[in-house]
Image (cartoon, rainbow, N blue to C red; front, side, top):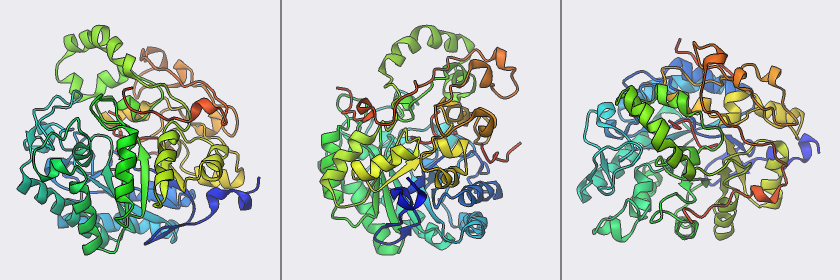
Length: 468
């Protein structure tokens, strides 16, 4: 198959914008903002490298809509105040120079219960009082008036994004963040209008953005989650049918919450690296970490879902069958053959990728040269867990040209994956690797119904990285 024949390189016409092709760089935390959430020139350089490498559509990492809704990572950017408009405008300038046709979306979000007061300087709030077992923060339930104020925060964030020059916004309604908390019966136990209608919060956000901006609006949704009382694919299909009438430009389908982050971004489990860097563990000291590693982790990892290529495809396909809105899938997309299958055989409208773009910023150019190219990313998840370190986003497996690609999946040896500042032989983490697999293995449908220096390297963050 030639580039001209590959469906990935056909433009995707959305309601308010046309994407140059159907391979989208998914939202990815980069750890490059200032401590007060201002984006930096390093982020502009990162996005420009992606654009120069052919990534025709780029979704930024999660930008918080208010200080109370920021994540715990110090390098996260915000869009919570007007003084961030000009820095974001400067971020976009090198992207436009690298590829004037590239489209850039700002992902906007509020963490809700999935943060800590030490990071926000404010009480942790949510749709309901249920604590997240990952963050353990006490949660105060938002009042109706506060919920309406949160809607306004999202809409004002979108207005700022338009003034900065973005082509659109992506409302983060997945991964257990605040919007997701209203959608899930596990966290939404309200007895008011926002409990009677779990979609109301999201609907008011989308309506406000559409009324007050001309931006394209994407939504990111989890197709299911890991809680018995949480989101199921049947419930999400019902939500998608309702959303179909809102005029949203596209849906991106992911999975899960931060209760079990490795089920969002599946692959390796470098737990010992995470335990050395993640404040949620290091704050309790070495005795707790040893206890967790020996006694809690063996139980916890039994809930992990094994990696499979295209691991969210089954859920995305069910949603696509129920709606007219364009649907994109994220999670385990690794080769040109897989992308062709998703578009031609499964009927989806596009794919989004994160970790392969960390590994190979020029991934799209490689696919244009060889439409059957397979990324050399092995989903080891070191980029994921090291987002909780001071290091900016990067791939920790070295030079992708040396690792190969475009064929068999390379398997990183333990010696090949060194933690920064540590000799490879002393890593001692619990890294596991997904097995090599055929692109057309039917067992890789990915359907799951729930519990039933500061500069980013060009090839170069828990699982705040993304979902793919």
